[in-house]
Image 1: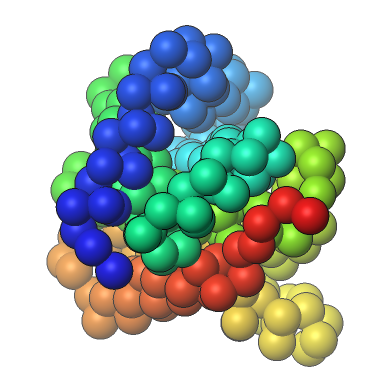
Image 2: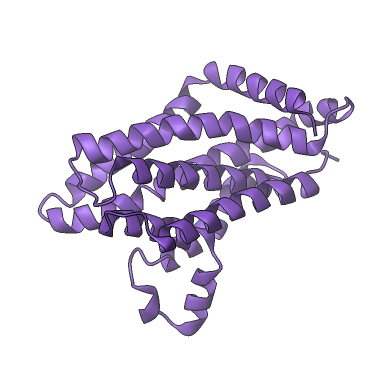
Length: 244
């Protein structure tokens, strides 16, 4: 692993994305726009919106980053960029970490904008304050980025990469406790939810919403999300392959 090569890869990815205005808009603006739509969908139910909106902040960035990174990484392989890079003295982990760093910067910008919209423009009040909300949103975006990088190794086309989104994200979305409390679900679904990272991302934002102090449960939830993020990057480096 070489920090210099990782930074060079991140710089190249950011330069490419700077010319792709539609992708930048998808990453930076869509979560905020969806939060605004969500606000007016619950126009007559302000209490319900205030309870759900912080948890939604952990879901929208994850989904957007998953889609964008899985397709972007797959494109590097299908157009031959990965093959050319792997003929050079660069490790697969350098390649993935470079992508991770580039999209981490975008995740930071995305989370900052979405948090500003949620707490400022939409005037949602959370007991824990803006700082923990921002940390949770950033880690959620990073989780989506790392899962997208990992799953791209198993797709052979951009269409397949998009298909992984409902297969990987939707089951977690349905069982994370957003719609139904997990203790009211069937035991099998509770076991599934307890090993899925989105559950802990949503739980972290629940903690921030309900508690003014930083709790031990919040630390545990964020540690689990961070652990899944790192693990996905490592497995992505192990499984990524050249195009046959």
